[in-house]
Image (cartoon, rainbow, N blue to C red):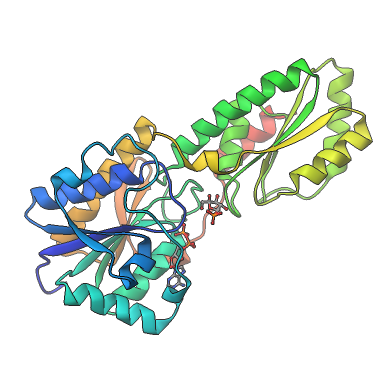
Length: 324
Ligand code: ADP
Ligand code: F6P
């Protein structure tokens, strides 16, 4: 980055995640404290193209650290996949003297940021998604709140499931990744955890375990099913028909995206926001902030987008040893 940046903007994009507000607050306050002007762009890339841009001060982010959702709103914007609109987005920022953009979102949002980088805007990505599915980082803002919310809901389902001696299938979010399902499944002591990375479709094995557990006197059978496996309702009908055990499916849905962020999400969001501003001030751009082995690091955005990651081996082993 050759020119010193004096004015930056921040937006949230893709699915919202608890802790995004804490991150916006961190970016705004860290920037102002170090002499930068900051603007908030509402509704992600859609708001950029519609010029829904407002200058923010320290007070604009008061009283939001504890709130779920995002005060900047979020959107999915298909136009932004087209070069013409990416150029327009960069021009809008330049016309306003905004030299750098901090994007809080998932890897789809990082692709939008990379498109702007190719048009000469300095960008920094911050991982914000409940799904934990960004390869370059061990942590994404929103995951911790989401799994805690889901865990509490699953505990409640387990109570009623035990009382009625039922089998319960609980479907959790995660898009095509099984991180949420795996974490919730381990934390709730589920009998089965089905994740897209590993589930081979062997429903008969589940049926056999339901029958075996019944004969051992187990009162419930809890199946945590990832959104990426899906079909929870029809799976419940088939398990009930094959086992004679009353089976219900619950899809937790959007409740996993809301709510007041946990301490961990607020803390990580605050740390990551400061790191993003520090990167811009030190002249490093087109990077994404990542948590690796307990430290915050930064990774080139293009490299980040081609990285792959798998469910941690320790999670897989623990789930295999503890589910039955
Ligand atoms: P997430 O950021 O949570 O992965 P999405 O995949 O929905 O969410 O992406 C959010 C937004 O990022 C999209 O609606 C679009 O505006 C932008 N985006 C996604 N992919 C691209 C791409 N290939 N090029 C430019 N912009 C993109
Ligand atoms: O990325 C977060 C997430 O909640 C995924 O778990 C889910 O697949 C998706 O967003 C749902 O998106 P939408 O809000 O468009 O229904």
